[in-house]
Length: 239
Image (spheres, rainbow, N blue to C red):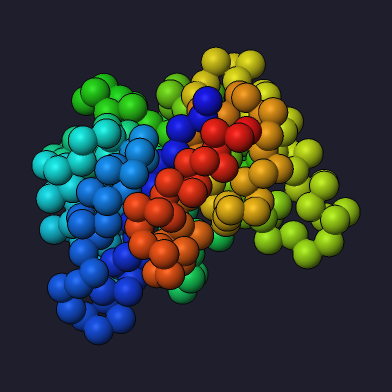
C-alpha cells in the first residue's frame, strides 16, 4: 500500500495571516503522525512566507516518522539541508510571485545544477527526490542525475475542468509513474490531490507515497487534524 506524507505548510500559512505564533505546524505534525501519517512535508521557501527555519529545526527533533524537506536548489537551502539533515529532500522549482508550486523542475534546462545538488546531498547521506512534470524526457533526465526518486506533479490532472482534459492528464501520470518504476526509481506523487481525486489512482501500485497538504489542512479546519488525516489514509488504503 502507498504511504501518505502530510504537508503542514498551510497550517503555517494560517499562522502567518496574523504574524502570530499559532496554529503551530509542529503541533499539526504531531497530530498527523498520531493519526497514522507516514511522513511530514514542509517547504522552506526563500521568502519564508509560511514555514520558517524555526519550524524545520523543531520538526527535525520531533518528527517520529520521516521529515521531508521541499526546497529550491540554491546554496542557502543546500546549507540548511546539510545542517538539518532531513530524511528526504525534494527539489522543487520556486517563483516568488506564485501562490503555490506551479509545476515541476525543468531538468532539460537545469540538469547540471540539479545533478550537482543531488550529488552533494546524497554524498552526505540525504536521499533526494525531484519534483517533475509527468513527462518521459524529464523522468529520464532525473534518472541520469542519480536521484533516488521522483515526485510526479499531479496538479494538471487534479485541476482539469473537463473529463477529456482529466483523462489526458491522468494518462501522462500513468506513463510517467511506470517509466520511473521501470528505471528503478522511487515514485511519489503530489500536488492538488484531494479526497475525491485520490480515487483515480486506484490500481496504480507503482506509487510509493502520496504527498498531500492543502486538502487535508482545509478539511482539518472543519473536523480536526487527526480525523482529516485518518480519512485520507482510508482513501489511500482503498487504492
